[in-house]
Amino acid sequence: MIKMGDISRDIHEHLYSRSKKLYVKEARIGLGYVGVLLEEGRSGLAALLRNELPPGCGTFGKAGTLAGSDASELLDLLVNGRTPLEKALGLAAANAVICPDIVEEGEKDSIALMNLSPVDRVAMVGYFGPLVERIKKTGANLHIIEKDPNRMKIPDRKDTDSILEECDVAIITATSILNNTIEEILNGLGNPRHVTILGPSTPMLGGAFEGTPVTHLGGSSILDTRKIMQIISEGGGTPDMRPFLRFIDMKIKQINRLEEA
Image (cartoon, rainbow, N blue to C red; front, side, top):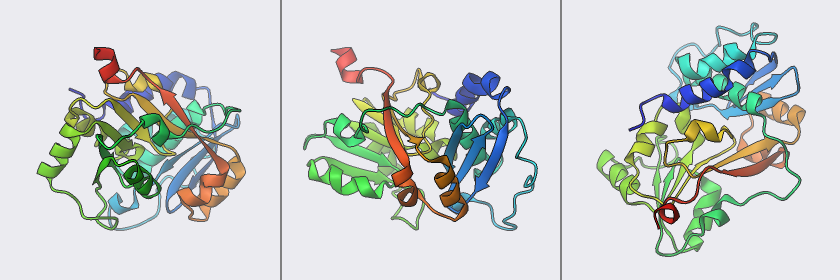
């Protein structure tokens, strides 16, 4: 059983000593994403869960103090942050410290790696609009679990439990790290053959997911940091950033059912 917050704590533990030697050059807070640029040129981003922000004043109390600070101070927010904004800054800092290398070969296609067929039951945790039709075209049986009522009807708890327990493939949004639901989701899985944490916010740090059902990480490398930071500042989202990102895949372990064979 994975305890709530374990994934964030593991990310923090893996990166803390490295982050103590790095310094923040810029931090951008937009409408859809948060971005962190370190002095050494490393950069990272994380989605901002605006629908989960507390009501009231929309300003950030630490504004004006982030640039020049130790990267570890932002990383601490991944564990100790009290709001989705603080946690997003923590995850963006983590992704900046990780800063995966830009590989020369073409992008990995996360859906192709799943080898979906009509016999598969797919649990999509977090609505990935561009992937829905692609999954349906494979004939796989797709069920979506979403927390934002503005995107779709939220399934009840009984349906959610059943979707997770019975799925063969799970696609889980990396934003589940930010609202502390990732552990509950992973604990609820039955015996899927493929489990991917997906999205630009995904920390490409396999060690943080050891001992979990996760088999793959599907994250991103930033091709043009200045453009990404501009888009974040101007309120853009994933479609706007897409031309300036390269999506990458990391295998953590062999597919579960193959291991058991």
